[in-house]
Image (cartoon, rainbow, N blue to C red; front, side, top):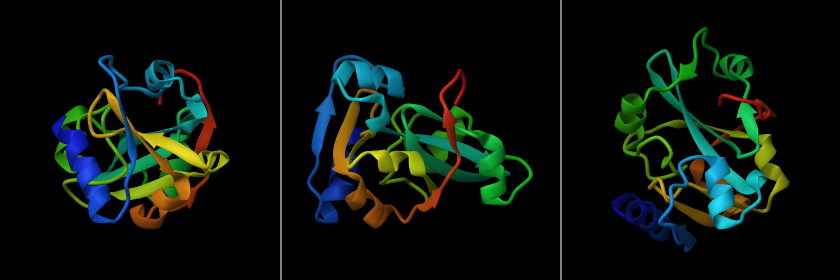
Length: 160
């Protein structure tokens, strides 16, 4: 539960109290999180880490959307962007794949927020473990993550 405590502590230090949701089942992807907790898939705020020529970037996107990597590449302004490998994710965020929250990273990470999240007032990002989420108003979250709002989502299909 160390990851969840880190996330809750980070938020608390900034004056934000959140409701946490913890399950004995894995919620490492948006579909399983939606099913386990009975939350609309669009309310899951999935955090996907990409490797942009050695620089970690995080995309926060609605659980019912995928990232259009070509659009992401254009937004970031690099020729190559790829889904980060698990060890890259861990070393740059301090969290394992499937547990990455939008806050409390071990290193500064550039965050891009897809406009798809704006369909929801309340969102549920990962809580720092592969079986936890936290509930937060999107506006509150946006106030302190310093994310750039972008339009890089596309309808879900297999992949990211």
